Amino acid sequence: MHRFFQHWFSQERRFLCGLLIFLTANAGCSKDQVQAPIDMVLIPAGEFKMGSDRVDTEGQGAEFGTVKPWYLDEHPLHRVYLAAYYIDKYEVTQALYKQFVDRTLSRPPGSWPNGTFPSGRENYPLSSANWYDAQRYCQWLGKRLPTEAEWEKAARGTDGREYPWGNTFDGKKANTGDAGLGDFAPVGSFEGGKSPYGVYDMSGNVWEWTADWYQPYPGNTYHSDAFGQKFKVLRGGSWGGPGHYALPLFYRTTYRLYAPPEEAYPDAGFRCVKSAS
Image 1 (spheres, helix red, strand yellow):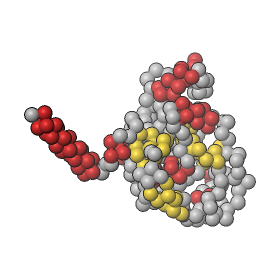
Image 2 (cartoon, one colour):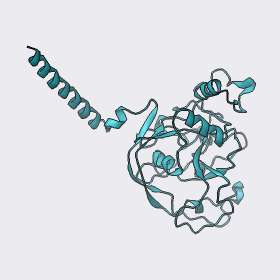
Image 3 (cartoon, helix red, strand yellow):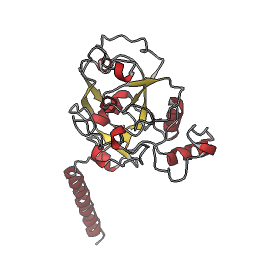
């Protein structure tokens, strides 16, 4: 009798495991995604198209006061292989960062009056944290800031799209200047603006710090005095802020903004990644 129940339990377990694999496979999921850390998304291993070959025109940014060329630092369009990794589904929120501040006795960001975020803003993206603050937060959780390549793959997928949702700008699919909110939005508010992997707010809301220094891509012939280990790269664009331009350019998956890592900005935040192996 004991052997009968042992055999029955073994068969039942095989059936349930097989059913789970079948269901996750047909949902476009993998075993790793079922086990993904809370509020993180698996980006599978493989190649993707990084950068662009778009061409700048003379005087293109003069009207808007943009300092650097719009596209030259994205050259050339090239393929990059990445191992599998997890990325936060949402930008780091005020409430999550408050836990870090309280438990590590870290300094609160400058955007918090009296050392805490305003009531009702728990699920809004954190802002006004510099690069070092962002890196410390990620490390506290056993994570890290994404490289430019990791950020870009999570935003554009493997088909080289211009925006997380496709190749045509739609200011209503993200918290851009065109969205008309005039403020940050709670993370995950724009369902139609998700990336191919289901990552939210990779265009708009807040600029996001990445791990990398502002450097030319391999094979890029463009020269900039800003290149080197002086500035860190931010990605994704923000809601804009009073008096700020909100050009579709800034919300492209390939656009590179750079800033001193020790500086904090009222429209800059971040998300974290974690290696899958």
